[in-house]
Length: 399
Image (cartoon, rainbow, N blue to C red; front, side, top):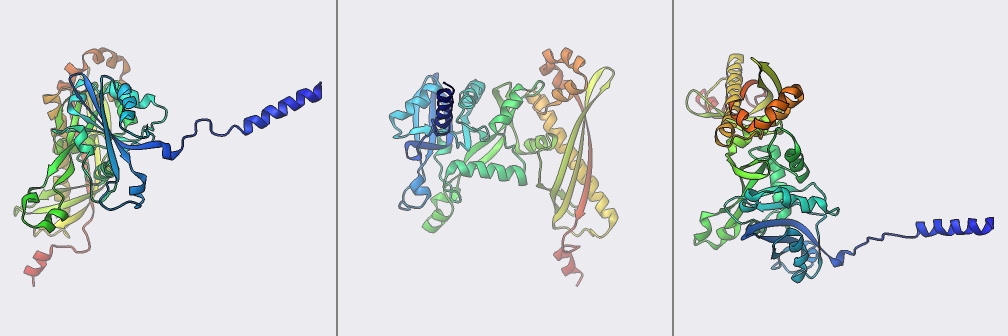
């Protein structure tokens, strides 16, 4: 009896080891989605998916063939729309490799929570793709634009946003998991980057070569979409978006300029930036303190300033501190005045410092936020003046 029982157990163990991948799917049976666009009209969702054509990406097909195909459908719910795609797509749609999700303004104004829900509920979909709002254009048309440097347009959107966020910082790169955190965080409303079509004026020129070199339509990031809870209510400008990124401590590197006494400019490359937010009380009311430290290099010198002079560098640093303070202040005041929603996370800072006070403020925070006092402290340092000390123009005059 013991031998029989032992044999059965051994057989079961062997079967467990030999089961393999029960959920295996062959690549030639899947349509790998790189980008998703969602529009809405008349209570119907218009779903478009950008599917990679593997043979074209690998260079096995002719140059005239596009590396992706766009499949689209219409349905009253997104779940139905994804299933309905099988009417036109020869393969089952596979969403594990999404790079960008583009939502139209209509969808964003109606509420993005229910749209995000279906994607994050799907265990196949990873939450590391970027979410964008199509501005003044349908989300579908964003997916249709081919780009010259990247074969897959959704990949181009992903990398251009990632690069812009790291070296220029007028928009914020927001992944879907970050968006969910912002939606669920008390005392904070989300923002998302806007994407637009940029038409090239040279497309009507008589030179065929110029038309081929300079594409007639390109994609460009355009401001930051402001939300109240999960609904779009307006837009921040690029400068306001950059101020927002400084406040949220998401600036890795960027560039700016200062005006010289002679009207010319000096360009600064921000190489490091760090911002902290704290809360204190004044007469029982919360005050937000924003402390920013930035380090920069001189990237371009048009004017005749003598940057060897320590006093000149001190004046430039003071001017840079004032400019950054003005940039952050304008961003905060614009949102307080126009939209009256806390996208900066000030409410979360107050909650962390004074949880009992926040319980009283939270129900009417949208009424309290426009009157919130915010103070700024900026510490700027110029670390490197470059390979030459003065401008070439000044050195020519000194000959």
